[in-house]
Image (cartoon, rainbow, N blue to C red; front, side, top):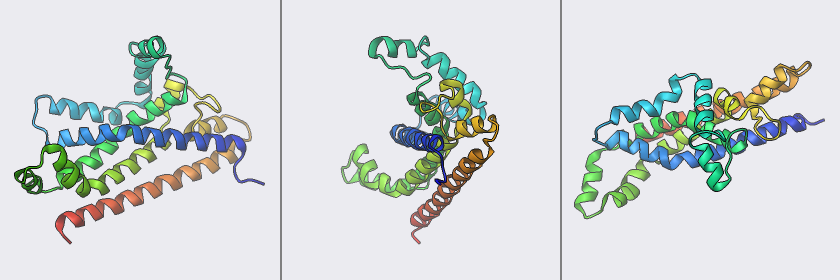
Length: 231
């Protein structure tokens, strides 16, 4: 007898796919945003910082509703995506990717930003005095130093995306095989008579993934700190 039933495997597989894509697609924007917040000097920096962290303080259902307004089939952005490219995000697994990415983005940016702020600016200045432009300085000097922080932020974002529920169920609903991720499946099983066993199994998996991500993230953060201090 298999430990997980087919519908549970489907929810787990979908969660992994959604979380992976959410992490990969948001990573370039996360690095750029963290770099702007850590090194940038521009008007509106506080506003950008507030917008980045807004999903952490707003109720997830509110975030999901705003996504529905903006990216729904009749939304301000969603209607253009549908009319011009035939792309629909609402009530699709791709919409779950968007919701998960937005909810996980602040954790990713924070981890990467802390890693960038721990880098001695003199190292970057030395690279510039040797003739390297900003892109090469970031690629050859900054990025290798902050790589553990980038990985830690990605792991935290992945774990957060795996556990995202409120924004996802509001934006893409709870459609089996299409948008039913692990949190949505747990909710559905708890509402179903005799579904407690399936819910518990998925809860155990969620806890294991979260603890593993946190442990690896803490390890990488400590490693980054030791590297910066030269120990």
